Length: 594
Image 1 (cartoon, one colour):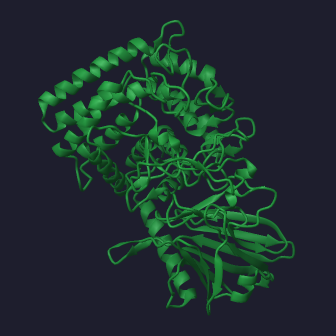
Image 2: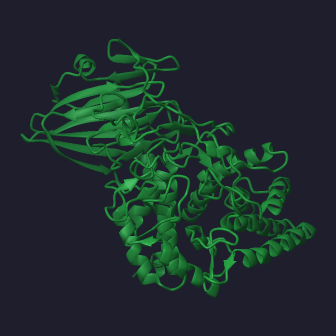
Image 3: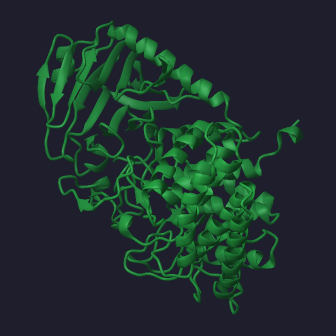
């Protein structure tokens, strides 16, 4: 049975998910949100027969999997029952060439015998149109072409092509390289190309990691989270997808199946915040370029909650019935109807993201008065919408209320505009936005605080707990030692904590009562505990979250508290951001570590 014990490889142009037995089960081409040419992750009915790229060891008894240190290069070692051992190395080429980063639509797989007489069967079975069709196959001298209406893939190899094409098992006597990519001839030695691309890609990632500002503790976990965030960055435009997958359900048979291969303003703000903490300025600058283009295209400052990775605005949702879904738990959805929802927190998300550009002297393009004026259009929307009903950050589909988190983010938008105006020496605009922010702040304190329960609640005048209330100090709305925040924390943990994990809410929504904890909320809870002085509790829960990752150090969106099973789209940038923030907050300072 397929699971989320998967690895990710990629190059910020394409990505692939690989299971523990060296089978590629998910790859969208030519970009993150495209048709999945390997769709076995969502074609998991009684038997998976298509949509994968497998290197299967005959007589397999066990496998081991690891990343090369500080790298996005994956190594899977397969063992048979007779002493045969083979190693599979997977990567998507990425390195600097001719003054720019080379990131082709290419996957490279290397097979290397380590012991005995290992026999493998290679099965390369792409599909197109979301599993409806299989490509036409033609053969060349040392390559196989997979012809589809919108693209042709070419697999070039120095291995026995007949065995590969006809899926016949063969003994691996010497290293073999398989290069899957565009329908272009490889004019040099495939063996040499694979070796050179591997060395340069591994060197690239090691060099990239050298410049991370790491905490003293949990460095390996933070490095893996940082690389994963980078792999979810569509570098050409600067967009950051929420996850590489669609329709992995949030819980078994829940129907909570969504397409996350888009850029959410909310999620991306948290990613930018984490990257800033790590010192990853180029990726941060790329996203700021993406978002400022979106801001510039909005005449009145209205922001929809999410966009396509090339800033597409129409993301109409449909169901693809030819794929049964993850473990047969459909539907498989493409597109996301949340794009036309009203979610008023987005204005704060964008302005908080862009605030960095006005203060960070590391950036090559700092914010100026022209950008500030464009952001003011968003501020006007926040000023008008702070007390208006919306779908909220959890994207409720059948009802709208005045959500406290959305109101706080509207306040944050106005608050940061005042600070930016002060930075730009625009005293009248600074005074205007400060007066606006203060007024909104007072009103939120009045309407979001439940006097009977002594807590901030999910909605104005409500009585339900919401994990997002844990973020009030991080957003600057309240100090962590404010008695109102301390009481809110107590209410949230009494209502939402299940074992060592935190739900985002527990009240019934469009699909019933939630069944799984939301991983980033557990990290928010950990940060909240640390901020009020309960650091030992926070460290214990953080260690539990580290142990909750899959075998490659990755997290999805959700988890079952009792079993630890991961659910939801994968890998989830929100979750990896939470890990980074908590590690930075909890780690011993370098100066106190020795």
